[in-house]
Amino acid sequence: DYPYLDLPLNSHISFEEKLEIALEMAKCVAAMHGYTDGVMVNVDIQLGQFFRGTDGKIKLVDFNRAEAMFYDTKKEEYCKWRNGMSPDGTLRAPEENVDAGLSEQLDVFSLGNVFYSVLTGASVWEGYGLAECMRNIIEGETMPIDKLFYETFSSEVLAQAIELCWTYDAEERPTIFEIVRFLEQAI
Image 1 (cartoon, helix red, strand yellow):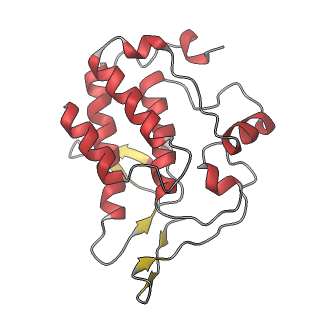
Image 2 (tube, rainbow, N blue to C red):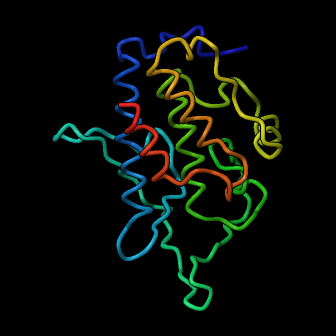
Image 3 (cartoon, helix red, strand yellow):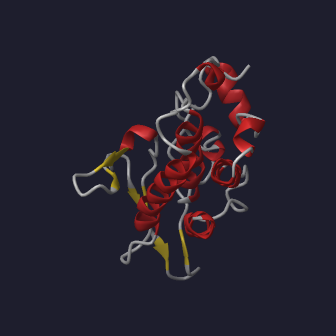
């Protein structure tokens, strides 16, 4: 049932290092969401968007789908937008798969998928068909995280970070800044 159990689990990378990698990735997203001229949303957070630079730091490198959020001065809040439904939303947040109003919180959900790959060595929904994936995401189902990832402090913290990112309701989902603080407190 768990495809990652047959994989080497990124065994060359310790759980402590995976936790540090996750924190660096979260800080990349936080830099976009905390941009001084307004919130920037990547809209396409996935593992392949992150690379380690020559300076040794992890960087978010692909912004082709990024959106600058508009600010409503009367309501004093950022405006949500719609993208339409994704034909392959297996790496997307639930709100993206039902054509709901979108916010920067979709990046947080997608970052949980990236963390899952960092932790387990497997892609989220690996081994599932598209229709089953989409149904699961829309209904609020998430990939189970095997109990073996709750056996060490670092892997448990990363598993908990995944669960936080995967909060179904975007309004209830922690912000990227809360995810960064959660990871920093553990390290």
